Image 1: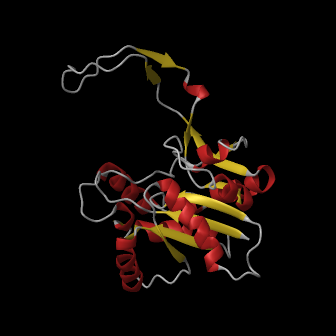
Image 2: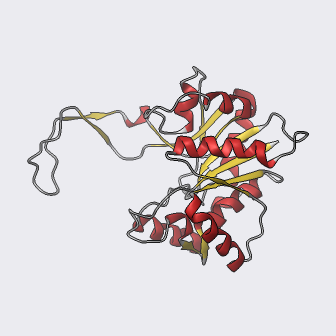
Image 3: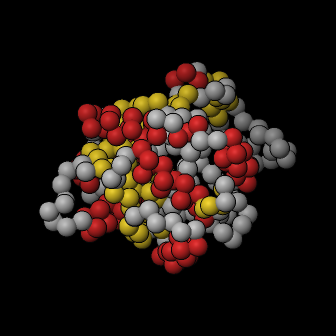
Length: 247
């Protein structure tokens, strides 16, 4: 059985809007609807778990009615941190299924505000996790990377940073995307660990068990929509056409 836990707990603060970023429209419909549909296209029959803050769930249901959005999915309640939200999503997988349906499978954990993940990437993550247990999509770093090696000066001029720094080999680094995909039993075991601030994504939780992470090729269009600029880019990508949907 295949599952996707879609985590959407944003409040839109960096967007400068009262509307949470996962509900902002692109192409005339909320971001989240595009995200959920991407997984339904890539993995037919996938069980979708949408993790939302409790105070956003009624609004989401109203949006579904307004946009005639009927794709089956289960809503779980978000937690204090992303870690706790994913944990609640994993619990919802068992609660959504009958005892006869609860069996081993694969689960992809995805940011709700990444609507342009490609069909190829989703399938690649699931196929790889089936073999290795843990697959994370990444893309190369194209800009030059500098590491700050001393504390930033508290007296920096506006727009300038005063600190010692050194150039690093960008070929040694990758930018991490989602869906981070795992064998379900492995991710369940990982999330039995107590929360630590160092758990910034699901891969870091699984790594804490000592399990290796396999990197797979992501797609550059798989942006995380968090700022007004990202929203402009997303609208442009939507107008350009569904190249990210190709299989």
